[in-house]
Amino acid sequence: MSSSLPWTVSFVFSLLTCSLLEHAGAIQYSKPIVIRKGGVYQGNWQSLDPRVAAVEIATRQKVVIQNSNIQSKGPLIRSQYDRANIVIRNTRGVALNPGRPLKEYRFPGRFLDLEEFESLLVENNEMIGTSGIYLRSYLGQASKGQTIKILRNRAINIDGRYSTGPGQYSPTEARLVQFVQFNQVRHVSGAEIAWNEVINEPGKSRPEENINMYRSSGVPESRIKIHDNYIQGAYAVRPRTDEYSGGGINAADGSSQTAKEAAAYIRVYRNQIVNTSNVGIAVSAGHNIEVFENRVISSGYLPSGAPIKAQNVGLYVWDMHGDKKKGTFYNISVRDNLVGWAQPLKGKYVQNPFWFPDCPRDPKGVSQCRGNRVLPSPITQTMERQEYARWQAKLRAAGIRVGLLTPRAP
Image (cartoon, rainbow, N blue to C red; front, side, top):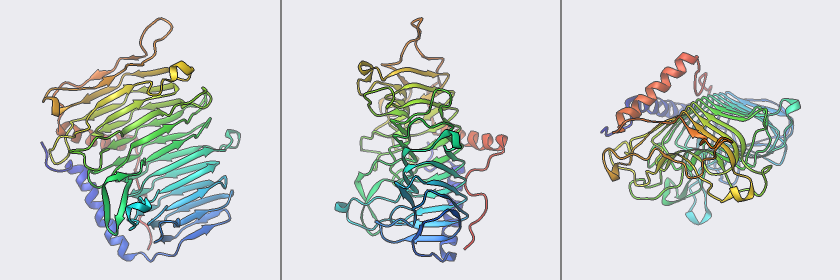
């Protein structure tokens, strides 16, 4: 087994680290900004107060942030209750350690914290050490072309660990954060999360699921599309010893009393999920959910070669909250996925690729979880490295560039 990250991934980290260090020395940061009118904004902003966003957007007019550098001990970009319309592109965001004791419950800042908004486009950005993108309560209108697009971004180390002081993080306590969290983002047309690269290192990150759809929904004629993303790594703060409830993608999460409030009309397809410990892809609630043609692979080992304690299952469909009795858990399809999910603590050739206790059946009584394939054991770290090479080839074939398109000007 390899004693380090796959060399291709290590190369990416090396380039990003060098770029970040060189860039940090050259950038002259301005104090936090509050944007009160629409327009195109470019700059270098930072906040050294965990309570203050580096960029606060307080207008309903369209705001474009591009070609910028943002770093913060608190939120990097935030807009709350202002029905924001935002574009963020070609911008680097770096979360700084909040430097506060654990009792104040400070965790690395969100790249974007957005509540009660109308439209969002986040494309070709770079996020380093942030607690990701949090979206709650979509208020837009499809007739105006208002939707949500999160495309071609690169994220390194999504981190919810609580700060215990300058330069220090708690070894046990963490906020539940994600690369992308939809929280009650309902009835949105045209929404898409695609072609993003998310890589988390053990000991330097702590996401829950990397992507989570909590009581969020598309519409029957336009489902939320989560596709062609590369997600590597999701771990407990101490992955060799601790339990962990996160993973790759939760396609539908959160109990609901009515079908209208439930996670619904979501498609998860052609993603690559690698070494995300507890679970690769989960469906734990909702209705009209499709999960197909994904690749879910985990050796069950950390890059150091140590086994992961919380290694659980590759793909599951489980009515976690008993929502079938409420009529809000139904019509879930999981098909044609390729899974290799090792459990090395139970044996070299032991796998747990699927768990489908609550997979619905069609009107003919046929399970809607079908056509899924299992890679032969043993599942190795070499196979994980091959997934990253496959991802790079996929990007080249599609002519897609992930992350920043041009260097940031100091």
